[in-house]
Image (cartoon, rainbow, N blue to C red; front, side, top):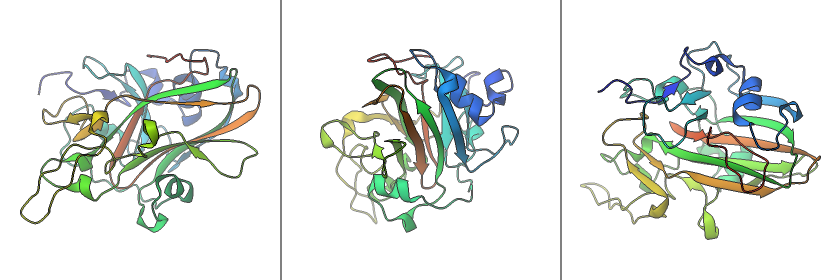
Length: 267
């Protein structure tokens, strides 16, 4: 491996790597546009691990010298965030000890008993404009080309939003045209038949960026293209956002958010 082949994750050379979850949300995830960081409150992360914990499932990333499509942002995984990048890691099977979550199960249409290692960031915010925009990508170890996991293992991502007074969330992490949620089984190329499995047809392959056969940038075996979610909100009204990842080793990386209409922050 050449030096700089992987993105930096929670690296000590970046001040943001030492941020608490509240500071990370206010100063990295929520930045630019018309946002006001003091309008963010009640920040929660699960599992609730301190910024000093080397095995936490969340943190800060910087593209460093790679060609990764995002310059910097927040990483949230169902394992150890530090293994997302930094150096080559062949084993990403670390267990963070959480089960599922009913909000996530509902968003993905999966029985909650099937979920494990769910991890999330949740916070309240008051938008300064009528639209919020998030740009992210989803990656997973379950894209391993040596196995047929995309046919049957649903690592997934949900971006749940609701007004503080609403009883239920709306999942913003869905593909255009009603094409379904952002998950391994819903976004993958053709999976050829094997000796003991029939394989499966491609699903929404236009949103799949490819298999990470070169083992660069991140340690996941495949990822989506950068995806964008937008939602209309009421300026000045409390809104709750819940960012979720679930099942085995899954990752999403998010660029900073903006409440300025039709504007994406590149970091």
